[in-house]
Image (cartoon, rainbow over all chains, first blue to last red; front, side):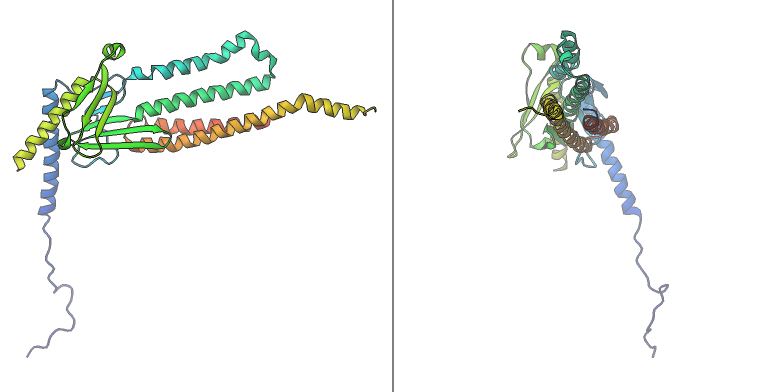
Length: 235
Length: 82
């Protein structure tokens, strides 16, 4: 009778080896999905008469290849929108006036009544404040974006210091998008507001004062349609 | 009653310099508040640059810190020069 082994060496233990095949397959699938997504986007852009480009100081960027907060792996940015640059005109004029104000006061002779060191420090503080206002306004414009991906709409807004609002809407949960592009200035510079009503409770998602709102609407509609087709195909 | 000359000088300097000292400290407090604001801006820049990838992110971050540094330097300059 054979005694049972008290110790079994590691060599004798047969460990079932995992095959690398599923991992490779998974990676291939991922690459395939990515490729498919890119092709779909390309088709949608062709149908909408668009191609990879950026216009109006990066306020209308087609396929920017930039990532944003909470972007998913299989998600691709189709359009990145900011408010039309002309909407910055008001604060640019304000900053311009603030820059020339010290010279104007100098020329009137009012500052001669004040001590030189106070005038010097006052001017430095004034220019720093002007710089701060310009910087703050630029930040609010540049980082408040409306993003359209192949899967959803993302609206990132900065209301004031440290207050960020991020709203999402899945393209298969949206109602018909609409736009408002009236008025003299808006007609000349081709910009307007885009509103997309969602089926979810959070209500509307909006891109305010974005360039070419008609093209934006078309791309959203095409992407939504494409997603619907894809879903029907899988069902 | 005749006041000594030194006393009269002291009163005169208080009348002439007093408001300027007050203005100086108003100035310094105002600039200190602005320095605090510029520090908050650097935090805001951090949040903003995290929200979207961009080629200007580094420049914006740098500018935010330069702005903060300038505002601190201005507070120091106000305390020393005024």
